[in-house]
Length: 132
Image (tube, rainbow, N blue to C red; front, side, top):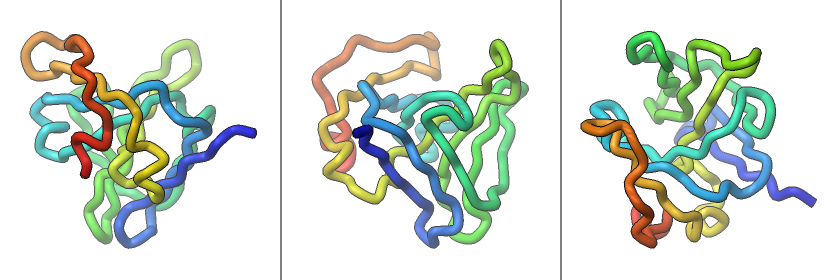
């Protein structure tokens, strides 16, 4: 049986489900992600990740847009603006997970989106280290 993670914004208007526990999560230091303070888990739209609820979006250039709840302001996910082989990338904000313990031990990949645009080496940090 596959575990399904659920998350939502603070008011519950925007929700997501993620099939399975990710092998890793990403903390990015780009000019947007560091301001939002998000932790991302990735997949493809309507494959392992399903989102629902009305959102407002902020497009960052021509690559992706960040979706947030128009009521409480929580950043719920980003979605690629272009498809790859008919599929679109999506990432949900693990900080909105309903069950923090279910994701606490997921390793963090630190992505340098500010200067070098690459993953730094893993340092043993987990979601728990950033969250609790």
